[in-house]
Every structure is written in C-alpha cells, then in structure tokens.
Length: 358
Image (tube, rainbow, N blue to C red):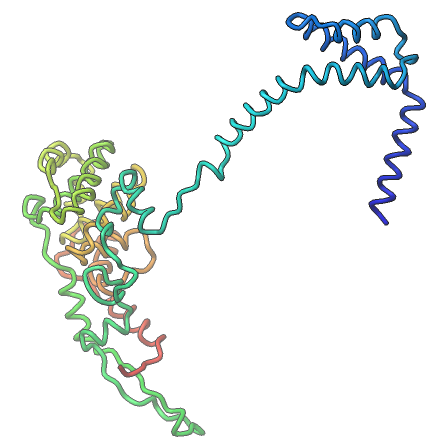
C-alpha cells in the first residue's frame, strides 16, 4: 500500500502546483521552447518550426490549448531527437572507455601479477621463478627462521627429563621438560658472532656491496645506493648476481666520517653491518626487501640485517645480536663475544614451549 500512497501524494502535489503556479510554469515552458526554436531555425528554417514560433508569440501562455502545447513540444522534440541521441552516444562511449569495469578486465594470479609488476619492483626478482608455496617452509635456502625449540633440537642443545612430580599429581599428568645445556648454547652463540672486522676490503663481495649501498645512503647518495641494490636484485633472475659498480660506489663513500665511526665502534662483521644498516635508515627508508637476494646465499647476514629494528631477533643470530646491543650501549668495540644474554633469553623461550618429542 505504501507505493500507492506515494503515487497519490505526488499526484496531489502536482495538481496543487499546477493550480497555483500554472502561469509561471507555462511561461517557463514557452520561453525555453522559443529559445530552442530560434536555435533550430538558424539551420532548419522549416514551416513547422515557424508555425510553432508564431503560436508562442501570438498567444498568452495561459491561453494555449493542450493541442497547441503538444504541437510545440513534438515539433521541437522531433528536430532535437537526432542531435541529442548523437550527444548521448558520445557520452556513453566516453563513460564506457573510462569505466573501471572495462579498464580492468585482465585477471591475474599471484604469479602472473608478480611477473607483470617485476619491472616496477625488481626486489621481487629472486623469487620470480620459484614456487615457494609448494615448498617446505622449514627446508631449503628460503626456509623460514627456526623456532627456539627447532633450533635446540637441530643443534642438540637440550636434555629431556620428566617433570618434577608434585604432590597429588597423577602419572598421566607428568610431562617431559626440555632443559637447555647452557655451556653448549654459549659455545654455539659465540660461534654465531662470526669473523672479526678486518676492514671493508676483506669482506666477501655480497657483503661489500651492501656495505657500499649503506655507506652511499649515509652520504645522501640515495640514487646511487638504490641503483646498486636494484641492479643486484634484477640480476638475481639470471642466477648470477651483478656487482658492477660496487668498487666505485665504495671508494666514493668509504671515508665518510659517520661510516668510519661505525667501524671503530664494532669488532665483528655482523655488528658493523647491523649498525651500517641502522645508520643508512637514519637518512630514509631502507627496507630488507631491497636485498632479498641475500637470504639464499648468506642466511646469517640476512637474518642479522633483518633483525635490525626489531625487539627480538631470530635464534639463528641471537649471539651476534646480543653482542651488537652491548657494543651499542658501550659505544666501543668489544673483541670478546658477549652472548650471555642471548643464552638467558634462549632459556626463557624454551621454558615457554611445551616439549613434544619428534
């Protein structure tokens, strides 16, 4: 019933409007039609248009009959129908061309979209031809970082014993506990710290390239740093990394005072590189994705750099990360690995995990 009442209400409104505003409505109608007729007669001086014009000019709008009003409307409408239709077709075509539904008709899969956008994002080149979704995330060069328990099992850093029996505890409630062998963990984390800093010339090529890029950013040579990183990333599609220009970029920025200060405050390669990345980020964004190519060729350096800015590192570089924090706090190099805090954190992490035998 509601639609019927709406129609009835509109009908009443129209009648009231017509009764009180008949003259202004008809005056506006005839004035507008006269303008249209004058416009049409400049190119189409026909008798029907002339007659319609005479009817409007010689009669008071209120005295026009229904037949005269229909004649005026139909005469003008017949001539305007074709140009109006053409204009509407033009606008329809333009709207069709600009329609989102028409412009975005190609369907992409994650793989095809990755390849299509690779020219804009060369950082994705290392994994462009890989199918990582079907691979085991715990195996291979692209494996994710180990959890503390996985790491402990892999390196035999725990001994398993039964939980201490509490009063009233049933035999079925007694669980196995993983106890960290701390001296062994300390040795492993110490080895994680890696080689001492012997100068930039002693670095392997991929680490030297990153050092050069970070030094360039520190020297506000953002374009040079980005060009080098994107060049290396793009070359990863060929499986042979292109380190062209590393030497030149390094020579340009190696004597930067801020860069030299970093090398004086750290004793190991990993801690120098972590602070170099931190220094580069003081100039602007330096995402880990820009050197994603590093992960399959040097996981230790990758995870160390990836941990910069995080609250918690992965267990695979817990040793050098702990030592780095100590050197940063003291603002001087320490040649003896300080990894005791890494052992403590590792022990706490293992205690939070329910041990399950493999």
